[in-house]
Image (cartoon, rainbow, N blue to C red; front, side):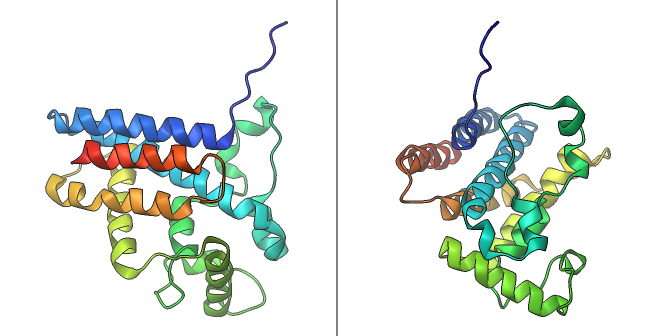
Amino acid sequence: MDSPVKVELLQNALDSLQRIQRGLKEMKSGNPLALKDVLTWAWHCVELMANSRLQPGRKNFDAWMQDFLRDTDYDLSVDRDIHWSETAHLNLLELLDIFSDVKLPILKPEFYQGWQDRTSRCHNLRTEVGNIIGKSLDAVLRDRLMLLLAVYNRLVHIPAPVHLEMKKVEDALPALFDFIEMLLDKGSTESLTLQNAIKECRLALG
């Protein structure tokens, strides 16, 4: 019986960055739908990197937040994993919210449940996340990321036509690489490899 193949989280993130490079090159060659690949793999990388940074500090959060950062085992479970969208995980809008600067408006008030008022809970959570990462999203960077998240949802998740201002979208794309770079653990053994992959993405964007 063949041994299962193990795919590590940061190995998965590196592969996503390499797929972004290919998507950018195709997009530059005149295929606007290659933007789907760029955004899909970029946001996928954000999710992986965010989890990689926050999960080790899981105990710093209350039980409500710990549920979103719980460990998962390596083994694939069909009965469990087909229900991924119904399980507790941080979605992309929630990630943008909790990685934002404390002073910025809340993006998803209903996310902040518990005995505290939502503003206090949001500020406390953003402060703890900022302590772990050492940085936060400022207003300009967050606005660009919100545009890219909206475009991603329209192209990938919402079954409807859409008009895109490609120049505006392309001008915003570096924000994704800024965010991914912000999520890097500079002390990790994989950091240099991931940094080089981000640099290649920036070069491919031009």
